Image 1 (tube, rainbow, N blue to C red):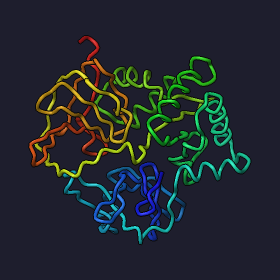
Image 2: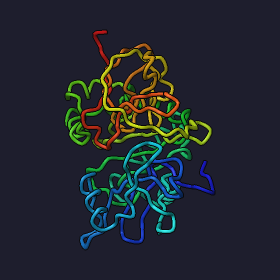
Image 3: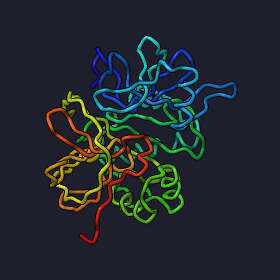
Image 4: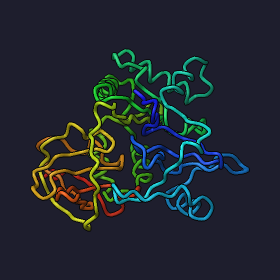
Length: 318
């Protein structure tokens, strides 16, 4: 699953010599570096989580070597030279190690209960990983359980297992409070009603014993699209179009093929809009138009981490 030459995948965390933990966001290297985004900073009080603004300010002031401008994607993110990495947190390894020992707290027990539900529905647990705050033991009693799922087939099987378990009453759909918490954390450009309608039908999130959990797909190397074109932003655009292909809608980045000749593809780099629409639905999209030298254009949603002013939503009246 992992390349020995470049063993870093999205959902991994990497820790540097300066006491910084970055979340990996890219499948391939960027001039020999790991594409990532700063998530935690070590302080005298322990690890402190930082948002995008805090992360960028801290790096600008103290560690500008980790700021990175991608010519290929015409985007800013962070990148770390592997020589600076002192710990590579791999979700699938950490999960298997955790399962060798008794649960350490209530959230850990809920994780095991959830995995038992998945096993009963023939999900291959060795193709799952533990990410988010639990990956680095920074979770609290009210933290989410974040799972990485490796491979498109395993992800869809896991998503069906979530749906089946919800229907069987073994786990719950997100309560209104949990949905609100999720909505506020995402800070997206949808109303709460729009957000919750889309989320409720994805079955990539639910709750077990009051705790929210999330499954996120990590593509296998055979599932990745090879695209070495360099894109340049051409402003923002809004459009309505019908979805022609949703087979990669839960990938990272998520992709939707649409019936628009100028921009036949919507690419989404924010988890908010994965699985947002299915084939045949008409969507309204607002994002950054990017064009390659060949003239191929696409719309990118999530050109910044918060995706302010960008969205994908189904036009239910269409």
